[in-house]
Image (tube, rainbow, N blue to C red; front, side, top):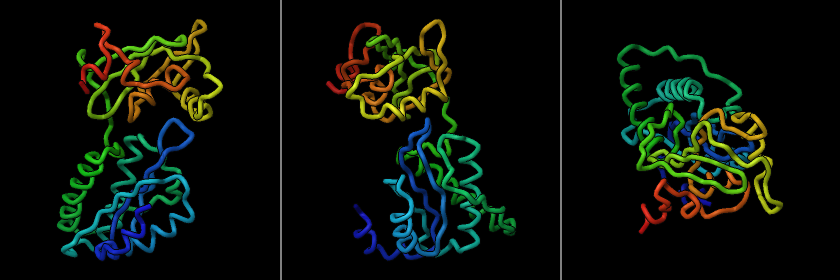
Length: 240
């Protein structure tokens, strides 16, 4: 929806590193890492040919200090680290770039730039480069027992993480709108034990309602259904 407005930004017609983000039917959201000589020209191609994405983040140097070789090295660093952290599905990146041959001082400059890339990507809410292991804080732990679920969620700066060991509902109501995606996630991260469906790893969601819907298999107001040990809701603690 913002592509027309982006056309007015002259700085997007230069060398750039960019990421595309979107949801998928798998347990992990999708991302694409790319480089281009003109983001505006490239993004219109992606708008026609890549349906998964709804958000793009673009990195440029307004001073012109980043050249084509530097951008190729940034692309390489981004893909290598994103593969290592394994938070996003990178299947759209069918070609893995070779490591560019830069001089040492050039690498140092680009790697400094990449520190900002990592920080700003995470700051905007995309954990492409962050290997997240939640630290439990009793104040931010909430529980949900509905439709056979017995789930625990951790609320922190990364979102709402349903913790390993949580029991989730085995079925969904007829009106549930993302049954296929839920089933795909459960195939990856849950096992059935003694007739119960148990998570074998943590799963982070961007909203409490999505986390609740996933656990319960129905539509919910997550700010109300998640409660701490004292019975207080997320809404009571963080929004009132």
